[in-house]
Length: 335
Image 1 (spheres, one colour):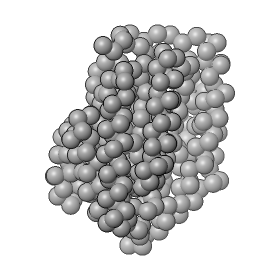
Image 2 (cartoon, helix red, strand yellow):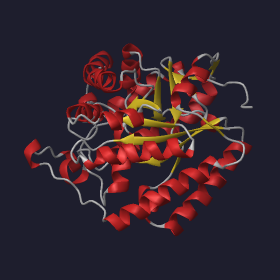
Image 3 (cartoon, helix red, strand yellow):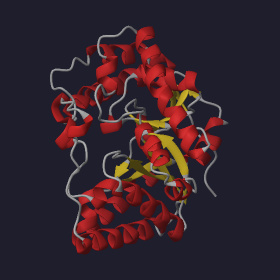
């Protein structure tokens, strides 16, 4: 089975989060496994502003994608798509996420390999915007096929959300060991079922360094205080941080030792899947998977950053109407 290791590079507020991203990227490089780092557009601009070429260089050893332009700073993706028609939503997504594409280009000198939603949110207009912006793939995909298959939606590669590590588990070796045992069992089960690619989400570098997510105190529930009022969350103590980083390295090493895997970054995955001939998806399968997809889409409202009054009906209906564009993508077995 092929797996891709993903991390989300966020937190434009606390400069130490820059060091967090570098440390995680360096750890994967030292262990000898490729990663994919999904970088927020505003974070990329901060790296340039702070002259952190060392961080950029470390991340650039891996695949680099766009984790939305502004992440949790309102209006977030679902908020700016709310109530818009299809074409108006696409144009708004192109305008806003296009700034993120430019930020990745300016900082990293490359095109983003994928777009991944903050808080695991998304709308179908985002996928069409990716097509128009030249972004080849969407990760953490909320569209579904049987057996977690990689697929195309609106002609764009979609990588389904996969298996997740927990940021907090890196602080406790016993919890981490339990999580790794669970992950290995899930991985072996998927491999036995014929799944040919899966994501392992390694977490958020800034959350490994901090006791809380950076955005919750500032933007939860739709709040948008002025920038001068944004607060940094509590950093871990030196002892606590050293333990978390040691455990992070241990986890990456353990994952790299899983039997029968081919760890690839999304740049390579895009190359392999992008050249594969897609297979049509039957109307029966679409009808079968839609109820699950609809539940997943509706669950996006649970992201703590959103205004709880948000109306997702338009995003859900736009998705349903375009399900006939689903295509399964398979490639030759890994060697």
